[in-house]
Image (tube, rainbow, N blue to C red; front, side, top):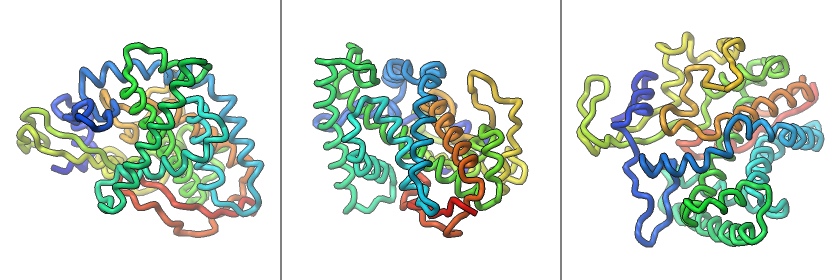
Length: 351
């Protein structure tokens, strides 16, 4: 079953009859992250990790994110690859610093992150599956060593805090670190790069310098970093009047739902002004109806952080390079049907 409309995708994401049906771990296999678990395992693990992603905790990161952003923009020349020099390093520096990864190890995460993200693609050629699996093993081995170090000498980082939570097993903690790397990095890279692409393409970069909040929401709607997600009918259900026996796989096309004319007038038009800034509240509840962050119990844990990074990055770039132009009208995309992101984005920063 494939859900494509905003109504049906929303129902699949919200309805408790649809879930992942995954076991926490297979004998001899890796622990499954809580993203792929159903209650009660999902509820328990998410509650333990969510303490680090409250709006108040995320707001404390603002000065550091602004400093990293300014540093990256200052290091770019008149011609640059926005992905390699800006959109990629910003979120990876944020998430690795949150986890307490030493600066000299940041570059090691690029290969791991790309391989793990590629492994999410259901169309991944069988010959490349081993690369993703090896990346997962190497990543877990690295964090196993770092975790042991943080338990001996705790710091102010997230890994040190999680390492002190007795309710978390080591396998659960390592699976959470993998999730945070991929979900907290790859998706934000795509948000920033996709945002620059569409703002430059439509001559709307100035909107980001005025108020980046509606800009980020429209980028998330128009070109969401996560294009689809899968669920399974955990018990007999129905969708759009069609019966779905227990065990039926359901593919929810987020990208399609975000272009549904029943939810968004003129949906194929990129227009940040469709999101009224007066609807944005201090608690950063979902200001629009797009489904880029999902819905229900699996609503993106890092939505507040992703929004903040996107807003800071796009506003700073718009102010620093108001004359930014695309060097290629049709830049290449990565081969991944789940995570939609640019492989590179050549730009000229001066008019």
